[in-house]
Image (tube, rainbow, N blue to C red; front, side):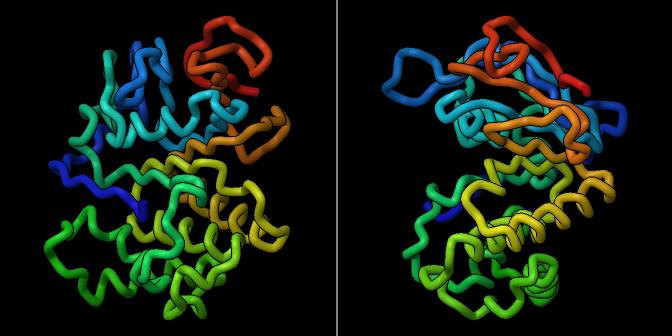
Length: 248
């Protein structure tokens, strides 16, 4: 895929509600009897930066897809800024892992970043000059403005990750779901992305970042949510249930 888009009504956030509230969530993929996620309960306050921790196959990507509306729920509820799933769609951006993107698709970097603006314009309306300005500004924040005209098939791994982050920034969402954005990138890219994420946090936006590892002393995060085999645990080595964020 390139990046999925689904148009919904746009509601203003409830300032008194958590950025994300999930209750008794069970979700799975078509054709699979066993759910990929079972009994997930969590609440992430506005402005928090949270690590979503688990090994490959733990359910991190599945949770992001369920929260962003890309995977149907079998039961349970998801509320984003106080609204039912989909009513605040423009406020949420999901950044998939690089491996899920079709990097041979014949579009330029700028065109890919502009897809972050489709949630406002829709598939059948053209993006305008303001959208292009925001896309270019996002690329500049990632030190990638010089890549705007390049075909995405010509990008290195680190450049791909910068461009995906730029697309997320271009949407100007308030809740960012980032699926292992620092995985398998060079040191310079990691530093640049870390700076951008720090700036996002200072703006009061909410960030949930999937990762394999979590250090309670890492000041980037306000807490952590752990998953193992599609269920919540107190840490990645425990089977016990856990709700909300584990604050250091």
